[in-house]
Image 1 (cartoon, rainbow, N blue to C red):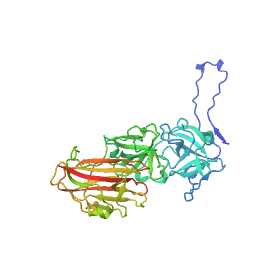
Image 2: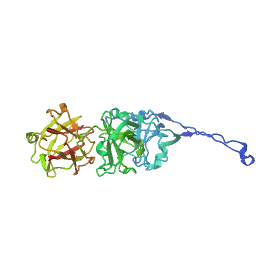
Image 3: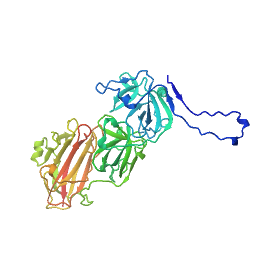
Image 4: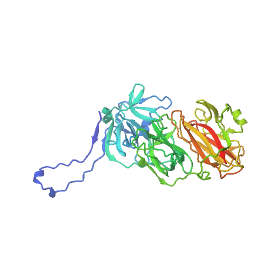
Length: 459
């Protein structure tokens, strides 16, 4: 049984009928903090009980032990469900943890910044979806604390503090920062997500299944992280902002424990009203209408090996020291080139596919066109470039980036929808080469891309 003592100010007034209300002043009532009679521990110490080598569920015995914490998640927006994320301090936190609670409306009782006390006796700790979670053991799993038992394990203090987001860089991400409320600054959403003709919402686009993942990139370093939003959230249909700025949310892992994600409580956590910081793309004007004369065309029919590809003048190379390259593949009866870092054990995996030289000397109004399909999307990690002086080595070539339409695919399945890019390259002369650069990682950036129907037309 809990043994806690709630201290407060008790004002007793007697014989009120004999005292006029203007003969005395009401005292200032001050709500005192809860006193816990038992052992107080820390969130870091709680997590220290878990053995990551065996990953065995750890159950806390009857020791009358508690820890105090501050609530940093809110299910008011529907982006969290039957869970409470808490951290040890309202500012400069050092440790956080995930509580499983069988209640789908926690925000009224456990609002953002609310200080709570959690009784460990009888709770179990396990590692699931990339984070440590506390709940009730049920056979071989840990499940949510039943609603009828929540009050036995969580005491709501009268204290609410403002949660100050911990400023971090994407390069700082590490397991100790999981389940903390953080801020990443100088970021923007990938250009392909905020173009005027294809604005993306938080989580209501066709590729979104259980969660919508939107890639954020740092303006200075180019490092990326995915913001994850539940397709059950009540703000899933809102469009993501097109500017740059900061994002505040909880750092955690995606459902399959493949990569870090930021999860926000509400869209207000995004302050992105500054100008974008995009790189400069080739700009030859707005015309994208293809001409009748074909200067170059490749649909990979008959390409069954890299040997065949090389014989047609293509350069297909892994420049990061690994073996994985763009691979000739038969998909739904169609020949394409496919690239993915999945299960390659290459981190990073930088692969380049470069066209043969394309002669623009005897034409004008040239348009480059190609089709790209994305599956098992774990980030937008394909880029397209053009050069007028290919050295034979992509690393020593001076490239100009192209504003290509890189599709966002489903995160856990194949796609069948190719996205076409048409890019005006008419301001270039002489000979050009087009390069497709894939920069993935077997651990967290494994998006699969299919490439087809590369063509240059002109008058």
